[in-house]
Image 1: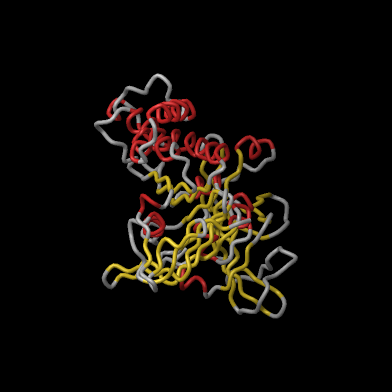
Image 2: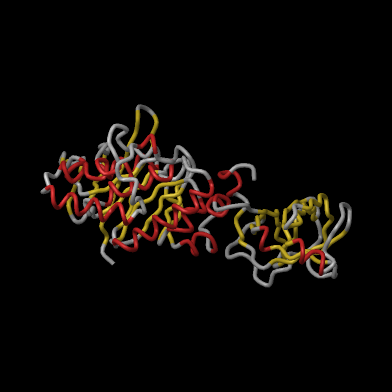
Length: 365
């Protein structure tokens, strides 16, 4: 598949603060690509560089086989000539313009004929479900409706690429869930390329064809499909960043692996790939199977909380701790309603092995 956006060796600093260093990135035509990472990692700077609102200190940026910025030659194409649609976190709709006027604005800047503008705007209003609201000002719209106007304005000029910078962060939880699926539907309907920037893992997993995980230093740690990122993390940072995670310290002795400082072997047929004296196994709460039968690792219930639909357990195993949840009706029907202080047994659906040295980089877990 053809790449529509390419960044090669892009660097950007503000004073002594190096935000991006030698960033390489390729985005394929027609895909929804998400840059996902913690706040301050350089996601927004990257999108501003692609949009043309910032200039790289070094490196080159191409859009649709056209060099739009190159520090070595001084090449630079301004934002209005890059053929991009942009939606920001704060919507950035014009407060003094109606819905119709906001959506029509980029077409007027292109000096399109009035009849064509009217036709395109009317069609776009229908596409984003804003019929009957065309004469309203932004102050008369909800946050979700303003976001739809911003999306419509970005789409109406038929851009080659849509840049979305945290567009849902100001919406409440229900609207965020609704709008993320609408964005994906619009992307598929128009067949355009979307570059989406967020720190929200759920949004990234829901809408993306591919995801790039960035760390706090602006480095891309892994790029892959949502399945690859979640189920085959490249390192401990990616695994920890992608949701609630449990970790157990494991030591190796010969060809056997023991939990913490205890004598219990890890109940998993395959050990890690590689050699190290100390390991960390990572797993999600949903990967934990808890039971009363003497099978797997023996543990003690340190905390038991009934949360209505689920039971939440904190468990200690040889000085190590983990957390798991169990659907309440399953816990009741299968005699798995444990009390604090009771013994239990733990097995795993999946384990991810990491060299314990990675803990120093990622920090306390």
